[in-house]
Length: 274
Ligand SMILES: [Zn+2]
Image 1 (spheres, rainbow, N blue to C red):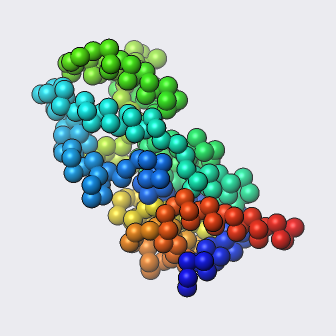
Image 2 (cartoon, rainbow, N blue to C red):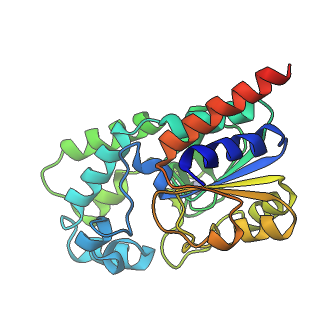
Image 3 (cartoon, protein in one colour):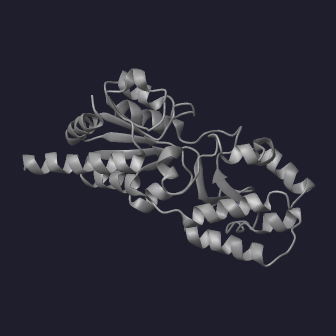
């Protein structure tokens, strides 16, 4: 089938759906300017994940050489500060608005699905803009730009940093006053909300796998779970992915273009029926 035919088929399937679930990977945020970390040319080719991506490694690195990761932190802050939801995020919001999509399961920590307007977002790798206390149960969602500008301001006020200066960059717990950290899943930590993600996959009528290669847990399993339970599976990914055997539709385009075209056709189908 041609790409046009795949898009048409995806739209036909979605137009009949009322409980679709989208499982989104780094590919959907790439068009918002957030580079994928693990791909060739990604962050983990320049920064050693054993020094920055596990909590023990990160603390050890910051204690040994507090300056070492500052350029990396600044780059991350600036990347997340510039990012905006892209047409793929807004297409998912429109599908929810039309009563077609219920839940987004995302591997991304950038808050862009919520900012685009989706309401049921399962963030399996956490959120970079929710801080959680290391001593008590307190956590709080911050506005992305507000938190970033606060941290950048503190960073620009000092020329060099000790380990405790870096800890002080984070907001304090408003419950007990202790140190907080971003509520993101680092390497070696437990992925969040797995039972809810699997339940959403088992109950959905359509699974949309967008920008996920199928190698990162739990996203790797969701389309298979959904297919087993009788759902149709639509895969959007310009790159090779692990879902060929379960794809009813495969759109080999970037997320923004694919989703914009699919949702446009869904609207035409729905309007024709009225
Ligand atoms: Zn606390």
